[in-house]
Length: 367
Image 1: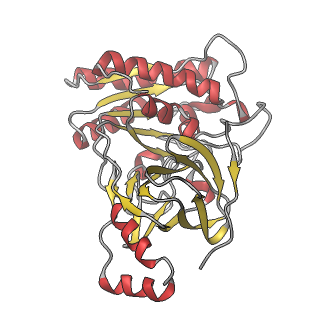
Image 2 (image 1 turned 135 degrees about the vertical axis):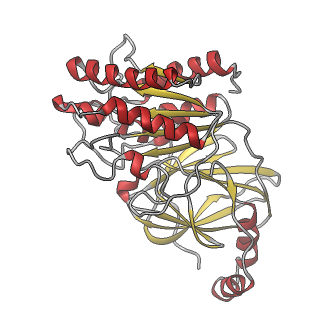
């Protein structure tokens, strides 16, 4: 059951850890926040970041991609975290595997996530629900009455490159008539995140609503997903290293082919993008996916083009690339806002993807 928390008033790559604070930065923190500076400094050395983060300083990490995760291990009775935000984003807070929702306030605030817990080891995961269009968030440290420890690394990694479906647009919408909003968006309930949890894997999601491979939904051919998917912050130039992945899912084409659009050389440019991914990660299993938001002639045209791109890569000798068609399940009630897949629809997509991973990579589920 989801619960929502608004916190309290301020009290004063695939997986990477924050670097140790410099002496000068530590001294500033001690002066500004004497009550919990030592704990905050210690946490900065142990935090695990999964996704695309830009580290502005040893204690400040800025992020905007959906699903960006901050993982903290601590042994104590309470835990505080500090964020600076636009006031439009929210996080999933997983405490020892149990999720709840945290709506972030505008500006800098400190939130007590854990209170009155028995002494012992606890894992807290903070996962961004919302996509880049709602502005960046800065993680500014954590504090506890106990000690921090490094959470264990995961040995499986997924990389999802997509659009609104991969970001979780409208996944919590109760009807198809609701529109785009931060409130109904939730990357945690997308097919990529669900599949990752099935296999106890990390997932990195590069996804922005309206983006395409050749053209965006508005017809603009600039800042398409292949141009921005490696950026630390989607709205700012500057790529981060390619994240090592076991599985890469490219879920693009819906915006390219929507409303009768038929972009020229789509299959050719899609094949070139798949080749780029292969150069960056020689060993990953790559899935080129389409569906379920398109229908009729648009879906048929997009499916044909994506399959042609895959066939071109196979003909070039790439044996680790394959097509996936995300089709709706037979039952009704699988669509949320603006006809995007809701939680039931996303779960069905996850079942399709997970079955393919099991068959192709012989992964066993770790749920």
